[in-house]
Image (cartoon, rainbow, N blue to C red):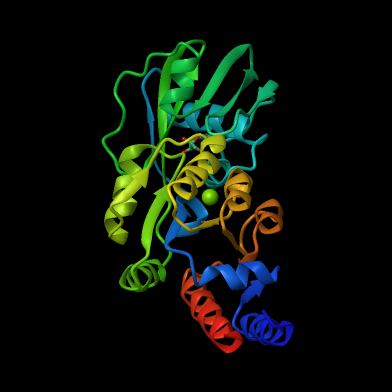
Length: 284
Ligand code: ADP
Ligand code: MG
């Protein structure tokens, strides 16, 4: 590729919020036939809020208090939502010791002499806690275990980005294969997929498996772009032919990607593809 055309492409991209870190990303994008999306923060706003709190063995306020006390140690968007709900309801927080936050699972620690576990069903099961009834909802449900017993649940909902349906419809119309990956539960994943017309989804994926799925698609001969925003997405962004980070995302995602969409708008992927096609046409 001639450096001049590439420079022009990079400059045009920058003026519309498509930040191109390396020339290879711009050159390869037109050849991409498969787009893999992370869900939370990429297809959805990534700013969830608490929609319901239920207590099974304790009051709702107590569920929120224990959950928020633990989440003080986490930077996950779910933690932000739970802390915000506790603040809004003036729930006082407790100190936590032995804090841990295993990726893709949740948080745990000891507070007021109780051992508290908060996270998804997989995490509670791993800690030997049997979950009785779960709320019947399409929201993400976070489960609270206290001293080995399921004590309550918190539902957290995260709406899709306003521009996502149009951008995905355009990409699908261009003939791209679209795949969604998420660590979230299957039911929530399916609800988001339905709103976006996505049929190929993998839910309850552990962070380390996102990169493996990208590699598997590549080994099947696909040319893959991965779009993501989180620390968890960084290995998958690096494993793809083209990594696309949301500008609203974490620094480590941005550093792992060849392209960053300044405002995190998915329409930027459509723009970036057009830019890649125009640039490569100029070169040939
Ligand atoms: P993704 O960003 O793809 O949705 P993550 O791997 O970050 O997924 O998280 C997967 C799941 O693990 C979440 O949907 C949630 O159920 C649980 N989880 C992760 N971190 C936390 C946390 N700090 N508090 C509660 N649950 C969590
Ligand atoms: Mg994400």
